[in-house]
Length: 541
Image 1 (cartoon, one colour):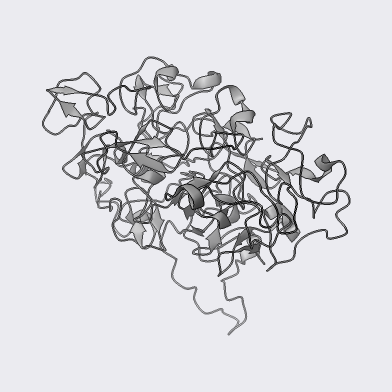
Image 2 (cartoon, helix red, strand yellow; image 1 turned 60 degrees about the vertical axis):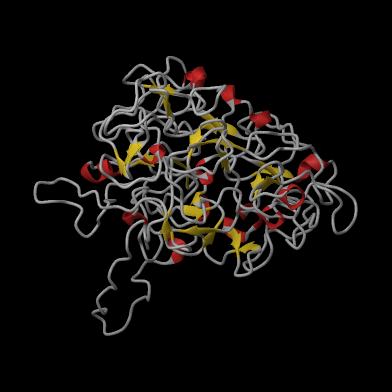
């Protein structure tokens, strides 16, 4: 099957799976990896046979920030009784919107702990009989009467209705399964295909279009929740609200005058970095498909935002270039917009603020040369001296730290304003404080229920859950916290965290996956499948 990882199957195999950037395809119990059926991803990469269907992340529309499905072997739908006497798995998980306190209670494996409700991850799907809201929640592609069907959904052109099954498109009309849109530009997920180019996702695997070519669904692909989409928008072509029986198609906000259209997670065929707002196009781990990679910290020009404070250089951010950028939805309306081209700064004049993308030309850059402007705010002359690669290969303005003529600042201390982790002393996370403003964290990683902007901010094994475009994420536990340790044998000596500190790279309260996700430290846990430990971080390049 070409769908995403059946995450419940993961409890019965001694292995790991992940979603992050660049990696090999994943093998999951009973599902061949993408090369087995002979299908290949675009650019010659091997396609994964487990493209995911996601339910939404929560009633607040949150989702893992860079789609890391980063799974491990210990996640069951019912952690207190997941295994029956015969070794079978009990499917007693909650669908999107159900109450939860940690991810394993949800069919998606993701819990938005702020809202206390189950969220989504299109990197995994639910098996037969599991609770569902829409077709994309299910490995079969068929959600029938609130439960995942046991047989593959009916492709476009098939006869319908069929008892116990559903059209992959959710559109049975005149006795035939039909496309969601009247004049579709591509084939939506789970329908029959012969080539990658037919599919909205750009990936035909096992003869069906896979939803999870990336960690988010592509433009014009099927959706039931806006946060499943790379562009943060999901609307039904008939103009009616999107429901379990009236699916939508993914879209994205207009880019206006911004010089890019590739938001985080969207396809960039052939490794075309110039289309990506992050100016970094690299393979997505589980499938090998080239996607625009996300940047850590503030959102760069052209990328999604929910409010101006999400953007690099927003007024009140306290960084160089403060006041230069707004989110387009402040003008155009809507829940999501894009970070606009910098305007006049608080100090007057126009330049690219700290953390924004910039012109970079060097052999150590995956894309060789960045098409962004060379106009970083700061004292450097020429301006390209203020542009550096962040730890994940995104070229960003870094005029105050780590570049020539930085005035001796060196790095930003904890508690002070920042744009990215590159600004912070020791490379500590640049995350929202209690007021929502980005500041340097005192620790090397964020523990369960602490703030984050991407998975890379969280301690190893913890995913960051946030709404698309928002920097206001939360490092979210997958499993319940362990019981407190017994009293120390020395009569009181010892550490309050049981010997594991926040700087060890693992959350002191546990609760995460047993492998480190993309961008996280790899000294304490091995990297999830599809990434490697490179210079102390899980990455692919």
